[in-house]
Length: 470
Ligand SMILES: Cc1cc2nc3c(=O)[nH]c(=O)nc-3n(C[C@H](O)[C@H](O)[C@H](O)COP(=O)(O)OP(=O)(O)OC[C@H]3O[C@@H](n4cnc5c(N)ncnc54)[C@H](O)[C@@H]3O)c2cc1C
Image 1: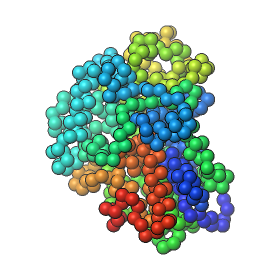
Image 2: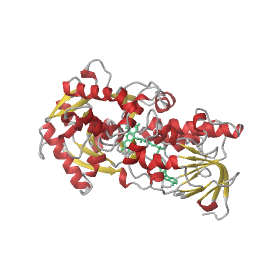
Image 3: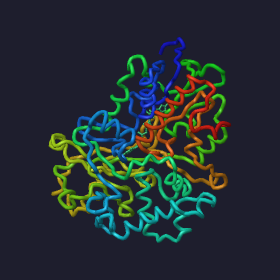
């Protein structure tokens, strides 16, 4: 490490898609006096592909059409995308989504699946909840006398969309995120990057204007940010200095107080970090098979919601790899275990987890050890990944948030500190948290706000006027 202080106009802390989109936005606008500081030995963060085998260990689906991610993949890179599921498909056969109930897979037009979607809609439009104190989703389901059979199905859906569960997820938070007026209207189609292509093709695109030698420092963990001086921000006791920081680290890093701020964060931000947001564990279990046994039985179902049929698996789906990769490495089925279900596997070894999922698939598709064609598998537990420590952020409820609930919590949390520290990352995206495109949007916004503050230092970032006192 160079002992001389290094000075940059802008330091981007965190090299996930939020930080990299910020870097790309700065470079596209001709601002190259920045550095990306990344704690681990690679960039990409929770976008993490095994390109050789075509496996996605982190973010995998492209949610909706027309988002910033969609634009890069479909328009800029011309990558083929294929529809995996679509909640709004008029014909349930085309939906691609299945529900496992009493050991059998049903399509979305099954009454139980329909009722589940209606309950989620009821939550979104519950006027009394809007005026009440916060409560967990479980408390809301009980308050609204929703039969128990739906609790676990909703739990399973939440596990995938929010890596949370009905016991810890805030009912008001769930309602607000659905209600956000900021929706970009990207629809309900969900895509896979097709064939041998992988999600982390976006990483070279986002860094094509970055000088990797000079503008990226890997294995560099930022543990302190001193912004007490009027003109200069000191990182890691002055090892690196800058005028602006774009802080693009996962929520857990701030929640676990792994970065010391001088002066300290505001009580409001600390309350939000501790009481209104959290990241639970999340695990992908990727099994490889000689043939796609699941397609032989239900060719139109690509993603299955498991409900209470299994203590560990919340959902599973069939991953997209090329014919060549399938021949070489096998056909992939991905099990998703999040939140409470991931905690249920904490005492198990990776081998035990793989065998558990294999037995579950055997039971569901009436197979056995002799005829399932199992080749092996991998487990990726994001709770164990250094500098991430969880899957993605969700709206938490605690005793403290029940007493004092801050509305629009993601908007408030993302407010810059002065015109010095700007926040980016999936946790700050009100309309699409826990997604790749949500993280990218926040990176782009933080960079544009920084650029604006450099050209007119006294200006308040767009959309932030209500929060100026923070
Ligand atoms: C299992 C799983 C499946 C997912 N599936 C999907 C999906 O199908 N579709 C979808 O849209 N999204 C999905 N997501 C969510 C999506 O991957 C994330 O929302 C997005 O990638 C987050 O990007 P980010 O830049 O905000 O954070 P990250 O990718 O976590 O990047 C933050 C970076 O900051 C670094 N860092 C941390 N602390 C420090 C520090 N102090 N100093 C320097 N660097 C630091 C970390 O090492 C990391 O590289 C999934 C996520 C997981 C875990």
